[in-house]
Image (tube, rainbow, N blue to C red; front, top):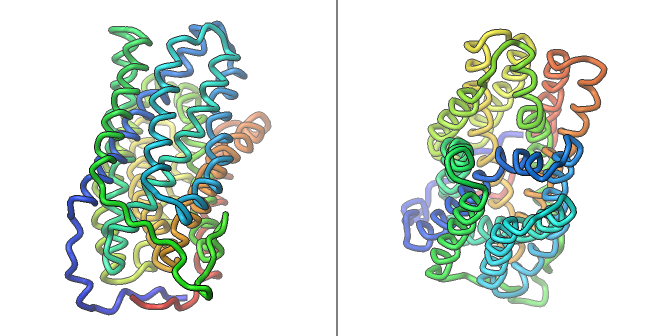
Length: 392
């Protein structure tokens, strides 16, 4: 089961912070900032349009569905066509969708734009992860993915609060234009990248596919991990209000800051000591966080759970992405990203629906206790599907 660390080779000294790596990291950061501005504010916009709670769920859910629809196609195209076009095309759709929100006069048009936005998001995030894997030295994949994934933590730490500030002090028009502007900056950064189009070179080389079998283990693990995350993004605010806590915002700040700190260090540790030493404790921390949430009735307990979850998620998510990339053939990295992020999206969306149904019967506290079970399944999946892999 042990996934040992890489054997030191000359490739271990290959530079990580190349121009292309910095540009794709900046592209990823600008993309996520543009998205995270909208996550806490679109429900307010739905209310502004006269929608109800079910409409809020539809607006959030249709984005995930359309992203999942496009990812397999995007992954296949990344492995068979020029990567620049997929990334730039996805970002262009992102920009158009964000601007078009300004013209939404009703829920139906907003849903159409969210579906379109999800298509762009699925394409550009699948492409960005694939391009990053191409420019990161294989022997430093864990470290590189850790830094690359900082975009998620940074955007979660600053963008939601910024989005709320914008709508409270300016307008939804400003919000949507700033989101589109950030996507435009991502597009500008992406134009400077020297893309590596790794196409099938020999008749006996593995053919590109829509999904990648070698990514099964990390994708299953991340599916169960993000199932727990679905309970947090969907119901934590309501749960905290029920516990008498009106502003649970510090939970997300602590979660993001801990994740921000843990990602680079966990990536370096993965490259030096192997995956087990990072992933197994990380999954245990996620399980612990769910159990702490189930018992939380003070802000300090919520913040303690946030620290546990941030450290666990910040360790496991980039490690699983690096593991998926490490064992993939170069001309199938697009399919790897498609498989991995489809599982990521499905975990969040599916988890939110399951926990919502469960909470109606059990209440939030017991729901969070049950939400520890996917974390346990993720740990068992990681251990039971583990086997020695080729070294790099």
